[in-house]
Amino acid sequence: CLNGRVLVKNPHLDLMEEDVLYHLDLGTKTHNLPAMFGDIKFVCVGGSPNRMRAFAQFMQRELGLAGAGEDVADICAGSDRYAMYRAGPVLSISHGMGIPSISIMLHELIKLLHHAKCRDVTIIRIGTSGGLGIEAGSVVITDTAVDSSFQPRFEQVVLGDVVVRSTELDKDLAEELLACSRDIPDFPTLIGHTMCTYDFYEGQGRLDGALCSFSSEKKLEYLRRAYDAGVRNIEMESTAFAALCGLCGLKAAVVCVALLDRLEGDQIRASHEVLWEYQQRPQRLIAAFIRKRLGLCPTD
Image (cartoon, rainbow, N blue to C red; front, top):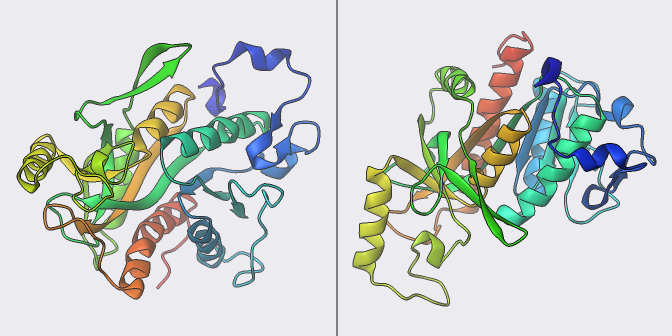
């Protein structure tokens, strides 16, 4: 990572007169990316546009920025694929659901950070997940993202060949986040493996989809094997996120709240109010981390 710069591993980009970041509705000729984004130090990504807007507003208040409490502008308003908001040195972006959606966003985001000449960027996925053997509302900081066979790898088909990439995340960053969690005692936080799947239903061993080709016994056997392999939660983006960020020199973390314990059931039955409070837990942890990094005193 050259002087903390964000790397792109693509020699073809240097030959392009213009780089259109199509799904973000941004580009190197249409926008002054260094002026817009050059001072960004933290990038937080999550599935839902509404959640990422709420996170940007939350960070405005947490950092004591002018205009706190007011609405924030969607920088990608010209695209309906992703939403992007800014709060001081923090960029908050939605990525949709699943590996294809987050992968497209990350390619363009990483190029954006590169074109903007950003340095020493920390990127964190904040999201929701299904827990494994942990209580609902627990927050899991991922040490390693694993696939459906519990292996630390991301498999991408490139020109018909399977390319295997590492899914290791920054261990020091995970420990720093865990240390920050000790100042937030009202919910449990732990470090564990996160299993990333290509599907919410059969791919995660659910019995309640439109299709199901296995018994409840087989489902529990699989989930217990996952638990024994160190998996503490299940979601749908972490392997791609870890692989792309790692290859491009970004210090990356995944912090997800568990909405339920999958060893107890499949359906998310908690009330809207409870789920909203659960979803704020990763946001509160990341806000404490960013404030600490910026040398700001804790808020009440």
